[in-house]
Length: 516
Image 1: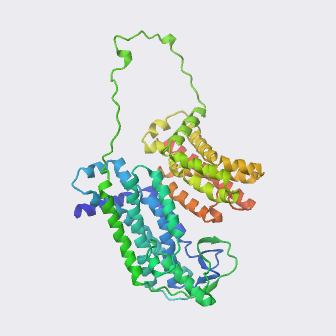
Image 2: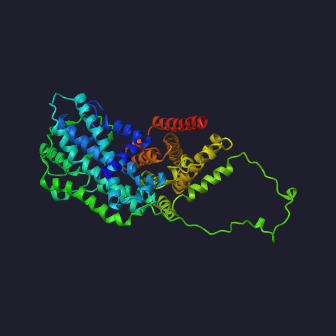
Image 3: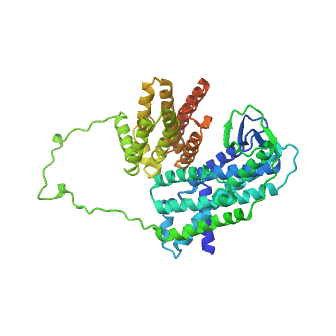
């Protein structure tokens, strides 16, 4: 037991001290600050018809708990889904495999470590929600139980489910990170958009948010004296210039079936770990090796011929970046399995045949998100494969190597959007074409900049998932490719942000080169 706890402790400390965790924590705090809008804010997060709750302890506790469960489930998977892979890279896994530790104990230690990491963020958001209550308080008394109960029953079990899911995906799909990312994206979307209508069905919600939102709707129905379903919006809705009406929400009394379901989701997670334990590779990674003749032909006495140096072709020095762009394109094209390009081709066909109103704001961001495994390492693969000293010592690594990587990434992204670009040009929507080009440059510079800053890919994967999910829900400020109607000021702002990302990436890489 002592060894088990020590494994969890050191794994937790190692991962919480990483740049990706610290940056994700800062982003989480910044977003958590907006979970409950300030009284004069022009946006809403949870709104039922034209009503929001009075800013009492129950409203703060339950709203922030719901938003934390959904938001942190969204990004938490991408934060913790590479624990086994990290052990493989650092060779800690091979050392662990040589010990008597069973597969179940090792995998469960990873689950518990993942859970502690996510729970740490939940606890910090919990503290921030209490601080926000005192900042925005409208004269209501502070009730600690209205914060503790929803956080214990809603986000905490959800974080354990996400921690289990990360380990299950990593064991079953092993090195296929793209399948893990895409699979979780669709699973998360399916759960969030599912609808439930009674207590039995609420138990099927792993995030635990549906029952609270249902009770909020019932409270508003009682005020309006209607039986029809009200329009509930969860997420960031901008431009609510009309001042909302207020209703009193005093929390809910959770039914026994829901309480049992939260325990059942935890037990289900442990059962899943038991089921997949026999399938864990235990770091027995087989590498294919080819038997080659160790004696080169040139040293074979029977075939040895005199080499005349004057007859050899003279090497030509090329200081251009065309060859580098070509190489980077090949690397991006070959990244991942070949059958993934079948999915990309299907997406391109859908861009060509579906109505523009669907293809532009919906299919295009999903198709671009499917390239997350290609873009996430666009500027950090040299560090990941430990060849950065060689790459950074090349001729003009900043203006040649980094530029070629960015150009290759933009070329791949625009190639995937070609069917839609052609359609928009035929109907003379040239502004939309320009927006798509700006969006391609933006997302590649974002991937490059975050890769340079963090020397990894995690943060970009998390942000790209959040941006894509926001675009699917048609949140205006997350639209980076012009899928929604925008003013000229928005276009200018997007261009400025894109240029800023490029400048930050280049300056940071130049600083890193000087330190080498």
